[in-house]
Length: 420
Ligand code: AMP
Ligand code: GLY
Image 1 (cartoon, rainbow, N blue to C red):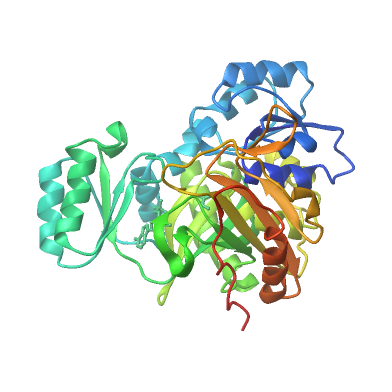
Image 2 (cartoon, helix red, strand yellow):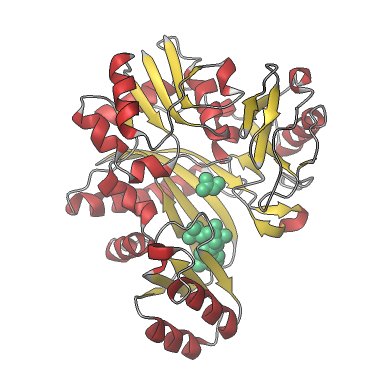
């Protein structure tokens, strides 16, 4: 089997690491890939939104399975274009990708399917939204309907904060059309969890769980980031709770979509808040998590291409997802200044000294002299597994200390105090 992976982050590197372990795989290509992926797959210089070029490449290279990493090409309809060309693609079509692309669509669907989520209202006029928040006298969360580079959500503890967030979206139009509609919802309290399910339209199976560390600095301080670390499985989710998520979230959503003529195929990422009243959905993503996937893949025992093919073809009745019983910890090494302004192009040393873990590259490139240099905010993901979180954590921190580049920083409290 020949596989094309689309994307250039640590998530894609981790998927390729797992895909290439399968005896069924002949060749893996990655478009566009990064400095680490280049040592595991043939990189192809086509961007994730160059859909026609990607289709032409997949047809000419005899690709049997295309795996789409990021959400943007899915929202642009890459799965539709590939399927029309007779290609097999792991990832939902445009009509299903709207589950991530529109928070109003996702919230309305959850309401219709009785899926537990924060109580909410939708507004398309600033005046209506302002008069609503003035009457609430409680913390609220203001969300742009569309994608806003991860900056469209504001947790507001006062009326003034909510007003500022609404004006920013609807008056200043900080995120253009993404803020034409807004969701205003109740603030949920608890721990966040990411749960994944492979879905073939009608049916789904749970595909692991993880906990993501979103803030830039220790003790969950500093700005929100794309993720500074992760652990898998999630320490507060057991198999029973995962099945509850399947039965009360994933399956109702799949059936609700089918009623609208939409078959969701691929992986569904359920972002949950574990509240004292049970799990409530914060958001859906139509792809794997980053950096959750980096912690998860070293624990997966099943054949990944086989699972993905079964999902695409729709034959999921007999699939069995098998995980190692260990725990996994991922530490993100980032460039000084991230998630704000940062410099790139610095040489990275020590990569070959990591022996007791995995290094998945996120923002790296190959420099002029053939060495690996930094090219992004999140640069590397160092992952280790162990019999408990503490063992995995100690290994991961030992290994990350062998690596260095100018301005490198990482959180020192990933996976701290998780064992019970
Ligand atoms: P979303 O893109 O909707 O998941 O929001 C991004 C982040 O904002 C989430 O991962 C949470 O950390 C936070 N968040 C979103 N909605 C809520 C809510 N209703 N209550 C508390 N935190 C929230
Ligand atoms: N880890 C958060 C995300 O992938 O969206």
